[in-house]
Image (cartoon, rainbow, N blue to C red):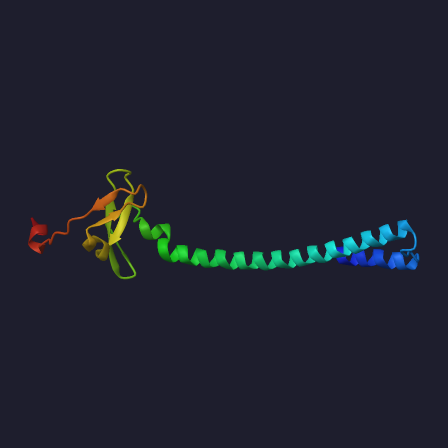
Amino acid sequence: MTITEKVAYLQGLAEGLKINDDKPEGKLLLAMIDVLDDMALTVDDLDNEIAEIVEIVDEIDQDLGVLEGDFYGDEDDDLCDGCDCCEEDDEALYEVECPTCGDIVCINEEMLEEGEMECPGCGELLEFELEEVEIEDLDD
């Protein structure tokens, strides 16, 4: 039984008992039932508004999760787990170790060409120098 149903029951009891506002006690009881009715309607409205807010917050949380996934990616996207380089989505990634915190971070060619980035682990500025390596140099 909801709170509004309980108040409606009290109103029915008051009518069945023929409580009227001729006597001071009757005025008091009827006034109290009116206040309870107003409070029950307010509580019902608040419950409905809270349910709407919870639904909206859940949608925002889901959208934020999608944005975080797009922005930060999975942890597996950032760390190569000790490999020299890896292939992901047909894009070469290169392993870089932060000299400050020791985290291993994989970067793509675009990040490498920028020449610098902040370490996601500690915020240290990592700088890169891109050098062309000849195939002949690798044979030596």
